[in-house]
Image (cartoon, rainbow, N blue to C red; front, side):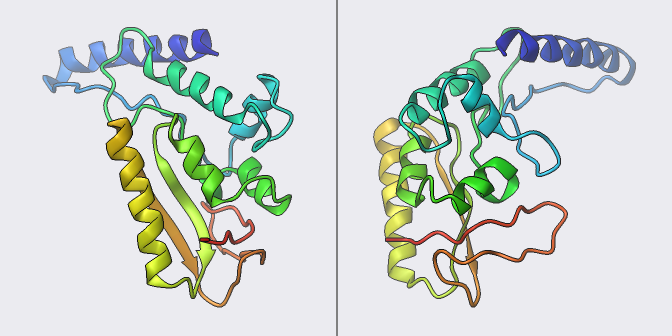
Length: 184
């Protein structure tokens, strides 16, 4: 995987060199994160290739750390942004499917984020989740970010009218429908 990513990094670098000569602009670097999209293959498939039977099974944290290391240690690139593993629940078909199978919860996602690059990303939660619970999960995430000395974000999607375990009905080209997660 690292070799495949490195090949593409090198190709982008060649294009950048040509553009810099012609236009005089300065290239600051690139975010090497594998940005999820519902229109491409799921990162869950990569976990399976690494021997994790399903996302959320034992081995998920180790695989997450390995993938993050790959994204953060590519050669010949000035890494900017998060440059890590993104586990965006509503942007990855495999993660969305894993919510339907109840293979992880929001606390597990927060644990995985300790070795990833992003945090809690595009997580659908109950529309009537009390502010106190949202604040608490944000404080937990902030505490982990401080303790681990790394940025972690929180992008929760409160879904009006839905409770934990119910299916979203997003009408978006960018969002995958999945199960709403509870904030304990």
